[in-house]
Length: 209
Image (cartoon, rainbow, N blue to C red; front, side):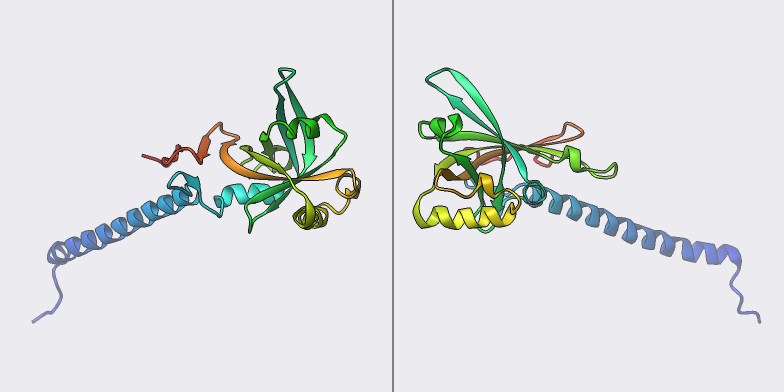
């Protein structure tokens, strides 16, 4: 007597098994995709209890590490005008602070003595190849003019990060500025925008429901 299973019976027996195996694989891939999306959203959503929780989202950290130049915007309330400066900066990850330096005999220094609120613009559009998404980052924060040992500590870190520009960092007439971020807006080259704010408990971005 032959032990060979008829082809019709084999198809009947193995089709449910194959379907079950396909369903298991399909569900596993769905779970993996949901987890990847969740991880991605968590990366750009470090806002809890109304504050930006250190560390900053990795996408912002990378931009601040990769770039050296920023545009500093200030407002002269007395003259009802704005002021814009191109400056070199240093990002200290452990302290979540951005360091700048400026000559004390400048308009921006006079403004910062009166008004602490500033805006920074950082972008990497000119440094990207065709395969990498570029970003523009707008930061709003509060600027402090540092003094004493803290100023010298920040000055040393700023000089280490920008060793070719001591003329803008070292000297008795050079003030050291530290900026604590209060809000951030990140826009990529596809005009997709993410928002963070210390005033909002809910993050507003493409991953939020």
